[in-house]
Image (cartoon, rainbow, N blue to C red; front, side):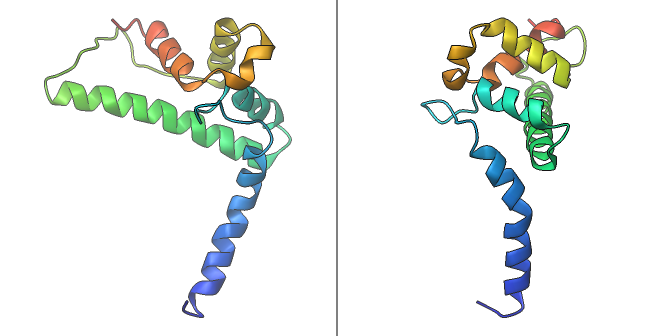
Length: 129
């Protein structure tokens, strides 16, 4: 390894440390998907924990942006299987509300995937069909 790359690699690993520590608290589902427990825990810790805030923000931003990009690409290619009355969107509040409504029993949170519930909620709120 080039001596010039060592500080860059070290800085990159150091910047990931808070996110990696956050990811080790609540586990993914048995199939490796992000669990409701992970999202709730990160959201709960976000106000006082920079790493948790960065992780939950990155997850939700990527989820919303990817969902919108997929819909736009499908429409641009003439294969849009979905029509929505309004733009899809999400907020921390809408996400937590949707997750709690879909799985009110917290005993199920550690093995219930969050992503599918959040995407379904975005579609529902935007009036997609």
